[in-house]
Length: 505
Ligand code: ADP
Image (cartoon, rainbow, N blue to C red):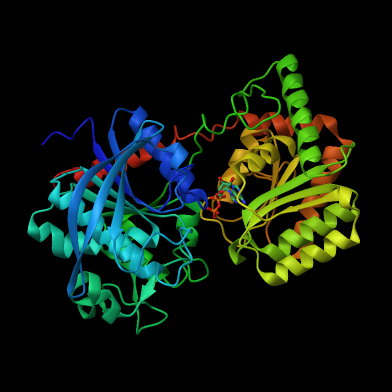
């Protein structure tokens, strides 16, 4: 059987950049789908119809299907399926008429019943594909919230006659796994106790529970994660969050593919949020490079104005992050304090801060002049773009990082990353000083151990470079801009996995 040249790919996901985004997952669904459409494939994305969707980014919103009934426990609930487009991507939005008002909480994650709502969403997505008789070549699932589609398809829907060529699961974050009691799972899959087995979905740490992500790993035909280094780390006891054994067991179907970033959305030449646009490329003449520096300087001025920082000849550092344990807020605090001690400036744009972190940040804010530190605790796309363009340096000291997108975006805007060498950060940032990488690939500063000394060591070198060594500093910016972080590398790798899975056995 000849493999299809034009594939039909359906992503079942819980985020999409600009429409419903919490972090990198939204960027990846957007960027990967757009890259697949550009390659000529038919791509559709199934999402929950959250009440907090950015409606202004949706076009052609109409009802695609009414009266889609989904069984949950002994009851059946009605759903409306909407269709819409976003930036030429085709979306289906599942709108449950459910007494628990799933997806009407004003948030995407963090409700007390996330497991119930996403398990229900997974089942409604299967029911929709089955009833519409959509027969994609690839059903692509993402993270724990949609992992349940894999066992639902294999054990239930395929037996009813639903058809998909192959199922792929991508693990964007291994820490979040979706754990539930088998009894509870029975409401969606009928016999939760069947899955409560070490070979199926039993959680390795909490043996009384079932683990949805594990279900995706066991039942999907192919499993990927978002960088080659994280793929290796996740198969070790230290990096596997309890799932290393199951990932080792399924290693033949498990691959690491480095994420890209959408080069049109993240483009300093056309970015509508910047004060001054500037053209970047892999080889810039001296004149063009001077225009990059001038553009970045204008954006820094605007950024300082907006964040009430003085605009002086100081080094400006930034971080844009969820302030959760993975991102190591304590090390971010260390980086901020060290920067301020050394006379630099820092802008933090962080969401989900814990109280302890807020207190420590407030203390720093009181200790140092107001003109040095700006703290922002909201989701602010516009400010994020301005920081990427206006900061000199960008700090990401994560404890673990499956891929990380902010270092790639920062480099695309000519800002130099300071990172801990882990996961995708280790695959994308190569230290300008102690490094095995060829000189032309060295594009930032990194440290190994997640401690105060590590941060100080990298940060001090970065500040010295920016303040005293223009030649080296400019070389770093050129190297950062030269690196291709687009989806050009990853798209064919996904395609080849899809094709391998579709090959007749
Ligand atoms: P993660 O997915 O673990 O949160 P990534 O580095 O993969 O981290 O992706 C983070 C994405 O979310 C980037 O696009 C970044 O710009 C964006 N982001 C994070 N925090 C904020 C915020 N407070 N405001 C706007 N964008 C944010």
